[in-house]
Image (cartoon, rainbow, N blue to C red; front, side, top):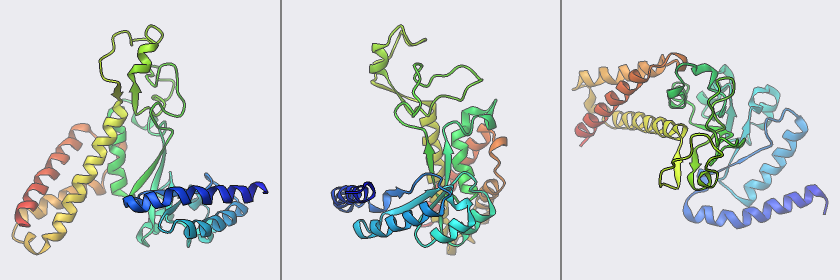
Length: 280
């Protein structure tokens, strides 16, 4: 078979194997098929459309995603009927905000290096603040590139970087302590290692915090919507909810203060608790 025909046959065989599992477990809408990366060619766009049409036959319900391609108005118009997720680093741009208002799903397209220069002197909260930024711009997901067990660009230091001249690590989410034990003496600062097989990174902790922040906000909005007919009897609560929404509307990640974000999280938790009480 020709290379293209063989590739199509291989893709079909792959979906024949994994789609029944996804369907059985209820995961069909939890995965997506990513098209060629950041393409700007009409030829690639046309080939992608052909592939998507086949994908919809092989695995109906699996969403499709492109990265950065929505920046090109001509390609965006061509692909619009076939793409479910527009993934872009410029998600704040008017074009993507228009897509969101029209009901399209837009994700942030970020690299593990991306947010370091923005947060010099305040790197500790960088990844957590991302989720508040997503909330401000109605971004519902992210493709966080160059991350993994030890990142895409593994270094001998296993992502523990001390030089400000380089990027902050390599996307490491957790460190394999058992492997590091074998390298004892070769990796600076790793002579006395704790018993757990893995250390989670600060990066993973901050992502978890950001996800939890998002869940609190979602709960607040959902409960407020369900209790809309009762909220008028609690004007102080309506004021607190407005304060939270104004905080999000004005949120600027470069100026975020960790203590301020923590206070807002506690405020949202108190609102959620009260809404749960009045919704009973």
